[in-house]
Image 1: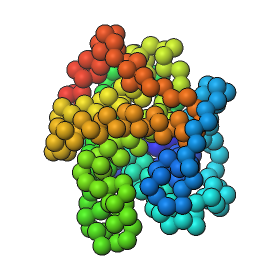
Image 2: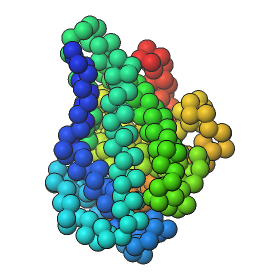
Image 3: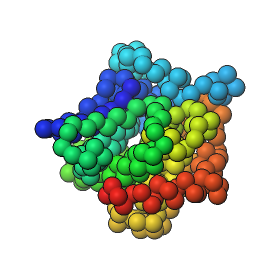
Image 4: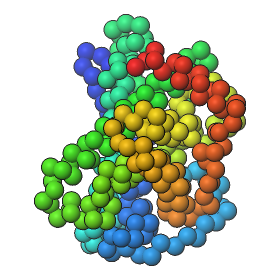
Length: 294
């Protein structure tokens, strides 16, 4: 379950089937679970967490590695047009973010700069990211933060552009009325989906290993970094108020959505858990490295 960016004579981005199945199942589960009640055809959302499910990883609960069954897994909502629209917009945001993340590595020429020459280089983004040799881990995490920021910006801009160009379509009118009314709503929705992706794709045991050996920052680090890009740099030119609102809604909303969809207890402190002096030092190491890869 992974996505890759390959730098060689021709740049290539590939999304493996397992990654696509996971994104489809995440979108389908959202479409059928009632977590977006404004859309017609919804069942009432029911929060029924169990301790047994809560100790499993989100990927396990989403059937990691199991092919997505288009007929069976869409049966409960496929006859409701608005639920189809919801599935499509969630899947498109998730797929674009993953794809643009890989494009970010290519945009900043991370592969050739990492390898120190023109030889082929491959970036792999997978669930349960790997450990790497300590000297290169901070640089690797910095590259991932840069690619995340690139992907967030492109995903939001493309969605805004798509809604503008397709303003007369009935689907666009419904999405505008019920989910994506304005810039603040669009940013909040995209950020919520990105936070969901971070949680689902995170390394399950990162607390038990040294942060200086991880190829990718843990999910809370990635979430705080893209939030900082909105709040501090505001590279999307959105207002400070809109950025703050998007971050707040995504932080709480993503965990609530995941909790209801998967029947697990929420971890309301998943971002606060990395707000310590020890983790701040690690953040500073990453941010000191970022200018080397921009």
